[in-house]
Length: 224
Length: 375
Image (tube, each protein chain N blue to C red):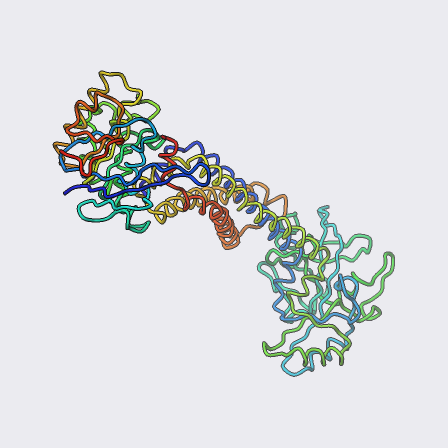
């Protein structure tokens, strides 16, 4: 089980604003390993996550998740891969307005075609695991940025995805909270055995990660 | 559905506002529908009750024929001789009367031949009797206005005295309750002038029209030929409604109002859902990013719209019915369950059609919008 990115090229924008976000990028990410994706702003970290997470189709190259090329799938199959195989923690806009922490997870279950009631206990377990047992009935506007990210992480883990993608988990979070989040990511990666890729600027996450991939010096395959 | 309900609950303020608009539109359509039916009943229910298939008017009268046209006895007799046709003279005229107890009423006097198919009989008291030409059978609304069996009713100005012998169901003509009299009495009311004491035999043997019962296979050519023979213009019973005073104008007015409401309803509902969709575009992008298919998002949106429109329409229908109960005694308002159901069904359909205007936007939400906002 692994994620293999093969010679990915992605261009964004049109006309004069057209830029090459990824140019022949290649790397391999292994299960149970948290890989930190580092590099300056604009180096293509979020684009790489979007391509790996079947949100964005590359111009060229392959995204092999356990042998399936996500880049070659049609729109419907890519949506299916997102809900069944990928857990995504976005940098912002992660949660649905007006829904409680518990409902955020149950909504994801519903999207995946699973019976929310059957996953209620698991949702509570995960929220407890990310330290939010006391926040089950809180809505996003009643939670801090760190708490919202932890809910998004619990939601991403609910259906035990093969691939966990996390974008800037510690942005605008103080050091103590950042250390907690980084530790949580490492712990969950090891526990659930997912291929975890975290785009980050934060040395706290980099230090906690099992491996690092620098966007400016990409390996042919990332070592774990 | 689970997520649709969660969102409905989470954004209940917005949905309540949206639902309130649907309630008001549905109530308004229901109320207008009630008035349309009520006014229609108030104008032609007596004609609708006639067990006739056609009405033959004097040729040459194009509008308000019951008041303007006259056919004579020979015409009615001639029509009666047509093969497989039943014909009976019918008199229609508006007048006023006062009971012996001082109750003043407007009434539409329908002159019918006792025992003919146009004779409504009597629900209470006795039916019309040719042997008692001074009898009158009043409709239920006249009873509501205080006319009782056994009363004496004097036709205003003419001084013709009639005995109320029976009552029959609710029927009205030209917004006036109907009373049935014999054709002889009707001719007295129609042709007598104040102060004169003419006997029926001295009055013209003429009537407003001839009521016909024709077989279903009566063809237009045969009707036209018979019309030429008898000097009449025959129309179906439904077409004869237009001969009632103001019927066409009222229907046109009320139908225009209803049509505009049916045009406005989808636009209002569509506009609200469009705003709602624009507001939640980032959330739709998140749902797409989490793997929701386009079909699921469309179903999700339609489910929310269907719930809001259904609940709003049902509440609006209840409101229209309540208005009917409140004002039904004072104004012509009639909202039978079938009319209400059909009206509300139409409101719900056009409301959902309005929602459909927003579906394209829902289906084309790009999950990358979420990352665009983040980068």
